[in-house]
Amino acid sequence: MVKKTWFRFGLVFIVCIVLLYLFFRSVEWKEVLGYLVDIKIKYLILLFLLAPFHLVTRAVRWDYLLMHEKKGVKFFNRFAGNAVGFTVTLVFPGRLGELVKPLYLAKKEDIRKGFAIGTVVVERIFDIITMCFLLGLFLLSKPLYSSYFNANEEAYSNLYFWGTIGSIIGLALFVLILVIYFFKEKSLSVTAFLLKPFPHKISTKILKLTEEFIEGLKFFHSIGNLLTYIVLSFVVWLGIVLYYWVFFFAYDISLPFFFILPYVFLILVGASIPTPGMVGGFDYFSKLGLTTLYGINANQAVGMTIVVHSIQVAVTCIIGYVILWKEGLSIFQVKKMGEETES
Image (cartoon, rainbow, N blue to C red; front, side, top):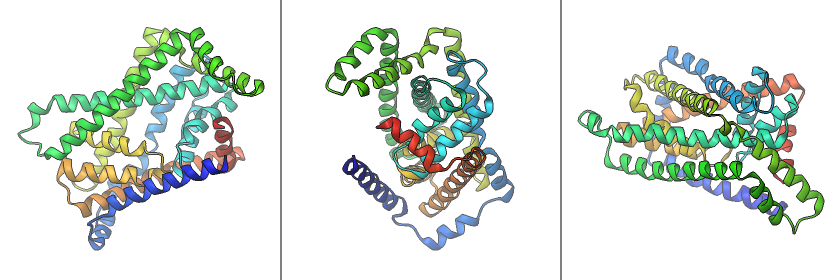
């Protein structure tokens, strides 16, 4: 177990270093420092205020998955689960916060752990599918805006490449969870077969979590609930696009809202790389988007990225730590919660 942990840590560290090298390569630090402060204060304040907005929209959306297990889950607990989960993801490598988020809520609301984990898997799949759909709209609309949007061919090549990968992953996972849900008994039989080599106590626990997990996919059973969830997924991501639209205005870059979509998609790709604080992944893909999509010079792209990344990490972690402080918990206690389930 210790060797496995160190191997994962080493791999994440190497990936982080490589991406940071690509991010900082060929920049003039004197100019970068200038762009760190070359931001309109009124928009900077607005960015701090808007940074937690996605935690609110995610909390609202989450309720439509949880209501099949428990109606009336408190909004604050849903908000807190998101905030604490993202904080753990930002502080530690491996996206452990994806496990901490449902486990934290399960403990607060007395919900089955496996069920809560199942809802978060659904969330992430719909996050991927929603942004791939929005990217698809952008790419399909190219004939309408190509005459006045001067992104280079490298930008479109990157978008097609990552969009294709994202679509394949999103659709494959979507089909997989549909199969698991609608063929529940068969799925449990296969799981039980695969668990035969393990001790009875461990296999029983995992089988129980698997059954609860499948129950967490129950919202597929209601077309109305599914459609509402799809709409709310667009609300979540259009809200995130709005945040970055304001971010561009903060640097006196005026672009139509629609043209921010490919940039947000690219930073979603970067943020999915499991480095602590999204360091490296978010930064490199942000720089890639800013330079190839909008023709922003590398120095400004690095300065802008450092600013927006710092705001997001600072605001999220402050909210997460305040919630944990009120609960009398430490970040390491909730981290251990996720590690115990992972193992």
